[in-house]
Amino acid sequence: MFDPEVVLDGGTDAFTEGEWRGREGAIGFVANQMEVLKGMWMRLDEFIDVRQDCFIVGITFGGRGRHTDIPVELHPFHILTLRDGKILRWQILLTREAALKAVGLEE
Image 1: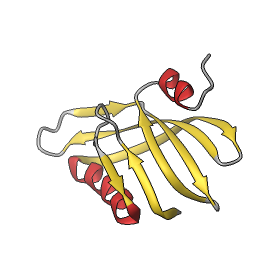
Image 2 (image 1 turned 90 degrees about the vertical axis):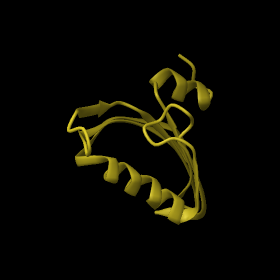
Image 3 (image 1 turned 30 degrees about the horizontal axis):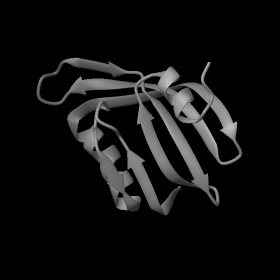
Image 4 (image 1 turned 135 degrees about the vertical axis):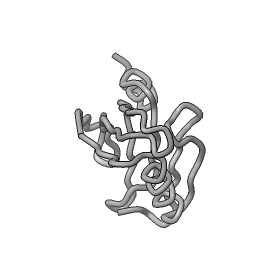
């Protein structure tokens, strides 16, 4: 699923922020979220086909804070760029507008 050179850019506003590199980094990013949230769940809300090698997905995900038990629900947009059918770049933005702008599809 991941290109060996995948770069995941969580930016500075994402739930798990920063840059994660390589397959281990991408898996580590997901594992980090699963460690923070108990009962983590995810739902695909929107799929935007940008071009043959790029698409945007709007998701909702949540769970309960592992240490606080406070319910969490977030609605980020993920830009996925492919190389040879595998994810090469994974960028997370907080709004649909920001994601569209990042790929040159401003509304």
